Length: 278
Image (tube, rainbow, N blue to C red; front, top):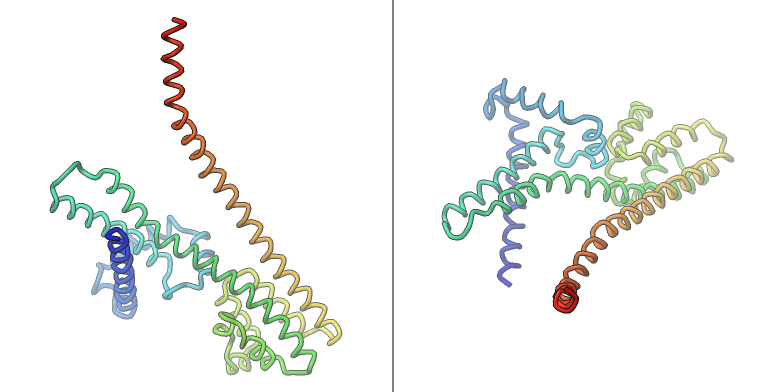
C-alpha cells in the first residue's frame, strides 16, 4: 500500500513538473529568449540539437501533431531536464539518508528512464493519433461520398462528413480559407493532419473535383479500401512486433528459470557421481 502511494505521488509530481515546464516554455516563446538564456548559448544548443536530429524527429512530430506546439528543441530539452532532475533528487536523497551502499544501479537506471519518458510519450501519442485519424478518415470518406452523390456542395459536404469524427473535425479548414484558395486550404489541412492517410485523402479530394459524377463514388470507395488496408497492415505489424518482443522477453526468462530450478538437482547428481564413481 505504501509502494502504491509513493508511485502515485511520483506520477503526480511528474505531471505537475511537465505542466510547469510547458507553461515556462510557452512564456519563453512569447518573451525574448535573451531574458532566459544568452543568445550565443541558445544558438549553440539549437545547433547541437538540430545536428543530432533530422527527418526522424520531423516525421515523428508531424505524426504527433506537434503537441503543445513544441519542436525538436523543446522536446530534447525536456528529456535532458527530466533526467537531470531525477539525478539530482536521487543524489539529495542519498546524501540525506546516509545509510546503506551508494545506489549505483538507481543513479544510472532512473535518470535514463526519465530521459526517455518524453520520447516514449511522443511515440505513443503519434501511434494513437494515427490510428484515430485513420478511423476518422474512413468514416469521413463514407459520409462524404453519400453527400456528394446527393448534390451537396463541396465544403458543406466536408463539414457535415467531419462532424461525427473525433480528431478530423478539429483540422478542417474554415469557410473563409476555403473560399480564399481551395488548394492552399487543402495543403494546410494535409500538413496539420501530418499522417500518410491524410496525403492520400487530400490528393483524392483534389482529383474528384475534375471527375464526372459517376466516377466519384468509385474513386472514394477505392480510397476507403486503401485506408482500411493500411490500418490492417499496421495492426498486423504491431501483432508481429509483439510476437518478437514476446519471444525475446519470455523465452530467455523461461530458460533461465528452468536452469535455476534444475540447479539443485544438478548439484545433487554431481555429488552422487563424485561419491560413487570417482
